[in-house]
Length: 308
Image (cartoon, rainbow, N blue to C red):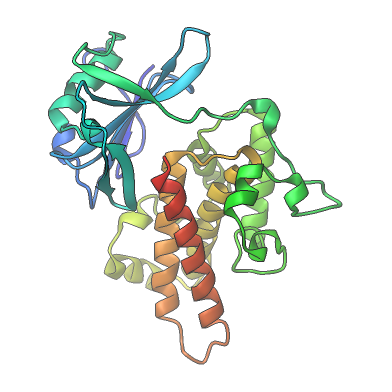
């Protein structure tokens, strides 16, 4: 079964005959900046950017019976670096990998029909997902520690806050973040899947906080209106944001990678928290502390997104 979803719309199963031409007219770098078509838990094709300037990646089986992720481009000599703007940052690609929605329609249709990539395109392999045997889980007695963290996480997460279990503004120092990390460890033990956005959706469904699924794409005015309806909404919104942040950095800590959609989701959560911080009363003693950590986490996740 094929599942199709975008930044604004959750997964839907596709009928045997599907036309993508009508879907991609809604590709928008600011409001709806990606579409993903999944064949199963290991194979997918995704498009991100705008209608006239987008990047397309595919994850597909290789000759040695493993799976690899590739960026698709034209057969051209220009491989200078350029960027594709998206709603939560930019993606670095080669100049010959800047495609359009016309290419997206062709490539998604081929993937959907299990056809090979047309000969006018070439594939550039991306960094492979890590070996499942190279996962890092915390020791309960030791707690958060570089000794039980993936080397990639240690390289990127340079600030002490990443290992501070008592700093409520750090990814894992609050109850929501810590619970998310521990649940994610169990997810990897049981599922072994890197699609952590699925994990996050199931986790939040279990929490049943009543936060709208599209909260990150709503305007500030719409969010304010929702918050004003019940006092508990503020607490629940923070929980969802902290879970998204802990999910992204937790995956990096455990596996050394962050699923692209999870990284973007984290960026949206940080952006929302920064907006809420700007509206805090100046008398609150922790305004600047929270702001500085949010900005640092934004910088860290942006640097990671640029490597995807």
